[in-house]
Amino acid sequence: MASKFIPGPILLMGPPGAGKGTQSKILMVQWSVPQISTGDLLRDMRKDPAKSASQLGVQMRQVMDAGHLIPNELVEAIVLDRLRQPDAYRGYILDGFPRTLPQAIWLDKELSIEKETLPIVAVNIQVSYTKLLRRITGRRSCPTCGRIYNIYFCLPENETVCDVDGTVLVQRPDDTEEVFAERMRTYEEMTAPVVEHYHGMARFAEVNGDLPVGDITRAITDAIVRLRS
Image (cartoon, rainbow, N blue to C red):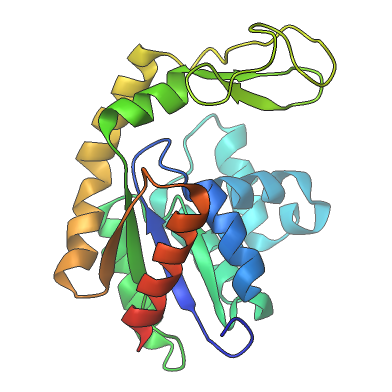
């Protein structure tokens, strides 16, 4: 199935900490399609000399040098340019876009113009609030090797240091309950309408994100194949 199946555009959705990044990386390998993240696109455009010198790169640099936020229209243009690259022909996994309902409507319209492009299918990863909170606030990392632990699910052998190199583990400043609550409020206000948008278009499925990683992958894969049939 992985060699012949054409996944097309895939949107993985879910609240902060739902595991979208982990699942995206697995699906990339499974179907040989790219993961397209707006954050990565903007960072690459700043660091890559060729991309920075492109028309879109120059526009972005001018906006940032002036101290302004990148306008939505420019973000959309950068995303659309990436979707038209040869490696995205069979499909891709969207990460962080569309984030709002207007962006989702815009993207659907743009993709409908490309007659050979399949419409987006969306899969929402559902995870309980308590588990999400523990995933975020329980996260600890090794500043030396980068290994990630969790005080609730994946404890190191010694409570406070890395198993690999003995470095004292640290908590990211934004891995707090207050920051998480604010991120959840933003998600509910901005991104939850995107979930409803695709749910209403019958191009949507939900999977249980409380399951083990492999089971979630299988559920997402089955859902996408079903939606494409």
